[in-house]
Length: 424
Image (spheres, one colour):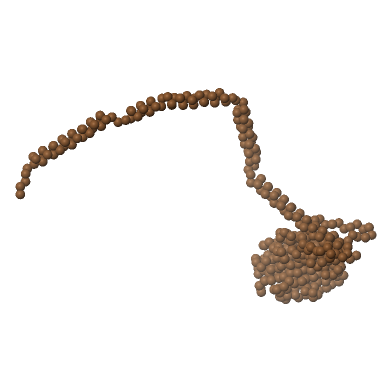
């Protein structure tokens, strides 16, 4: 049964370049318009780091940055690979100074206990590990390791002897992404930049394992960037987001994924003229694409709502934690006291007759007004007459001053005449 062929411009196609290859969207990123619908999380993957925070950009994931050194980064898939026939394509870029060093590890393990470790620091694990580093001063080497959960790589004295395949590859400072492909089909094949690195038909990896990518740097670090990781299968072993037609023969349809497991929303489906649809297949394909795009957009709303609810809960908890233990009880008691006081005032106002008090107040005001009108003129006249100066006193003072001045002048004349005469 052939799947519906969709236009190449739609980035959320589940078909790869071959008509029979299906992209497992829950395990893939970088094949659509954006790595993340919101810039804060990589759908279907968990990020962790040591001595730095893994950076999620619109077109790449920076596992280890150019600075600082001695840093580690890791991303692990949240779901397992549901089939044993798959191909994984990894695009990465490594850059740094001439003396820089580091390693990039691709994991396929039964459990995610590897964490942020490399093959040099990991304990026991069950699965496959591919490591890219400058082992042996070769300028770059790719090596493959297998473990059944009994070997401790960290404690092993000769880790090189455990490699089942290897090849030289100078991956640093190429100025372009490198393409690493692992195929698990009738054996295991590893190729880089479309050139076979090593192959073995004695290894067959089981299904239901997790993918992980880790990197570690030394004091002089290398920067490892992941631009794409796409896992594809020859058969649709997981729900293909409604891209598969209904099964025949009465077999039950596959269970659909939860909406919050969908990848980032695709690009908007362009408008088309109705005359372009010549048959029902084209009409169905266009309707299918638009409904799928709408489903992706709706699915992206759920994590935003969940994050908003979480932030509101955190703010509410922080507000409650900042209040004193009995603050709400004290506030409640004060409000109740105010309510009782207001009720008492209301009862006093409504239950008393203030008419008599108002009449007495008016009579008092009228009495004060009449008293002022009757006695005020006489009082003012008496005050003016009592405060006015007396003319007799004023005249007596003037005469006394004149007499004093005349007496002083007479005394002066007599003394002057009685003084001895001087002749020249």
